[in-house]
Image (cartoon, rainbow, N blue to C red; front, side, top):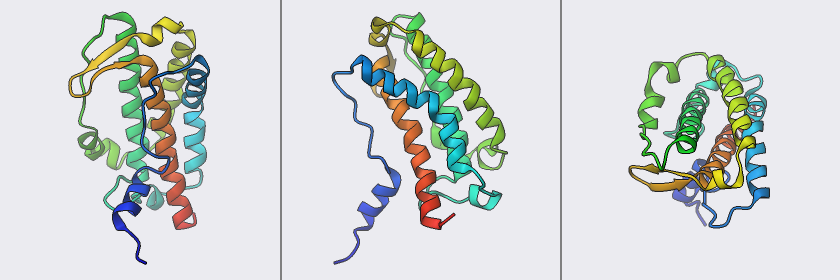
Length: 182
């Protein structure tokens, strides 16, 4: 019995599974997701503790981003998420601007720059985002924005997506460390 390469690659790409939007999201679930977002900077720092430059420049899977690119991607992506929350809270179903995350990951500041600026950014960004999220009322989480390609997305679903997103990428790093015995 052989190994199915496609299944193996899928596992490496989605170490905690794909994000699945819930139709019913409870206050307790939102609280868990907010805690995940609050915890991401510390969890990320633990996941990369002690890694050297060569290890940071190792892809987490064949043809995947390097650990360095993943860290910068988290900062880029979560900045966009923060702006999307604020837009949806202050405008009526705003249309957000998507971005090409793969192209951003190829820019020099994501491929070769020190990770420390993105780690500091995530610390501050998640502190602000957590304050915002914990101040929101139940009705605020029902507000939404429109993604030009994906359609309308409620803030409670977006919260779940970014809870998953942070855990997803930390798991990439942890999975790589385990595989490489770092």
